[in-house]
Length: 153
Image 1 (tube, one colour):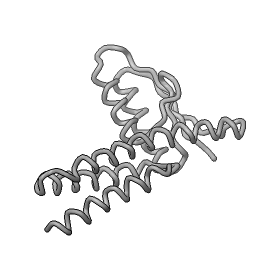
Image 2: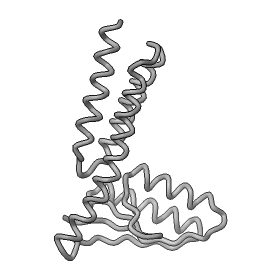
Image 3: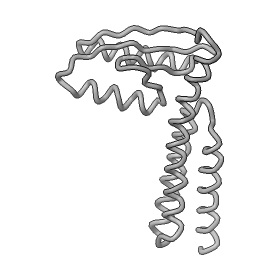
């Protein structure tokens, strides 16, 4: 498997560009391998995302370069994939917990929460490159919440 890496350095001040970059990397589902090194599985969308981020970093007075590479060993490949699975699993786990909490909420709050959880699932799925088992659990928890809401309606 090939990966796209963003190697970057941003000045500490002002902090706004660093915070914006961190938020975008998180939204894209990038693995932060080291301070100043992020990775995503290589595809056209991720390559373009990193190209745009590199340009923004340079405009903010920083340095950035894009690299495309393969892991040197199967162990390195598995370890990097596991980082993505672990991060996704935690996010899906939060969806399961939120669905459980909403199950006993009043109907209006439950419907609003259900809509939010569905949006969250779509967002997570769009950046979930190594679908952990928690993804199925989260989808089932949201479906169960929707079914409970339909029964009460």
